[in-house]
Amino acid sequence: MVSEHGNWRHHHWEALKSAYGMSPFFDYYQDDIYPFFDEQAFHDNHWEHLYDYNMAIIEKIKELLGVTNVPITPLSLHITSPIPPIKYYQTFQKKNGFIAGLSILDLLFNEGPESILYLTSSH
Figure 1 (cartoon, rainbow, N blue to C red):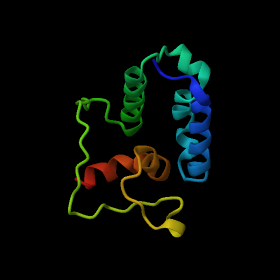
Figure 2 (cartoon, rainbow, N blue to C red):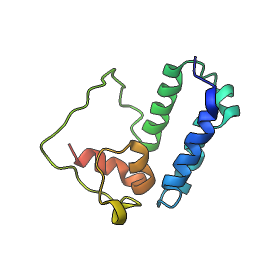
Figure 3 (tube, rainbow, N blue to C red):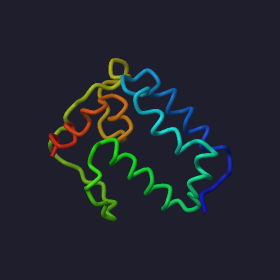
């Protein structure tokens, strides 16, 4: 069962808004992402198990990237590469420098529809 403890959905959504609210594509994607943090939408979708919730998020991200035909494989390895990551715009880059490996939401909120170009060019 997915925990209901601590109002975590609200806290996570507020953290995303705080971190990415000023990013170029937050407004563009927020309506697609918000249902994963909305209590009513959460219950309406019957995400009782973490696996179901995670798979729904993965499918939404695939849809937003335009790669719905790519199968998901159960791989959870952290692979490091000697090749430096390709930099993209990040909202707080002037303050913190480029930070590699943050999240797919960081990429989507900062690069928008061009995120898929970043992902395909970095391999």
